[in-house]
Image 1: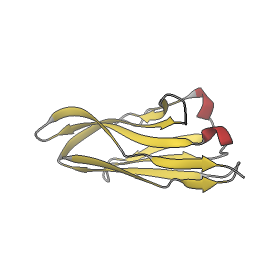
Image 2 (image 1 turned 45 degrees about the horizontal axis):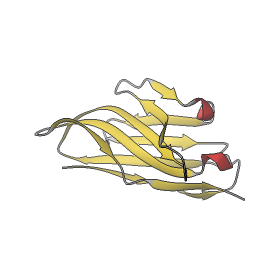
Image 3 (image 1 turned 90 degrees about the vertical axis):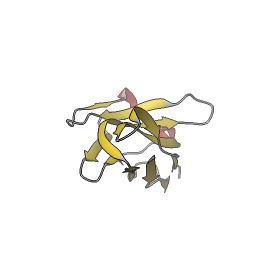
Length: 120
């Protein structure tokens, strides 16, 4: 069994910052790509940022220069540092990871989501 547990969401004023964390636990042999997605009310889920096991990153155009994704391979944790937040960043943020488990092979896993609200 593998679990992804997110933390760090909340309410922040425009221009503020938040840091999201997502820790993977369970019978993990290796973790490939880790990513953050978000889904705003009435919209489809969209990719925000992705980081490979080697540390290469990519971002949605809407967050480039403001958000930064990183990971700690020892702790099996991915982070999303969000700066200069805008009201349009309001969404539920989901952690995603491609994980190779000891018994289950390579699968795609999702966290439960954490709410980020940007409002004055």
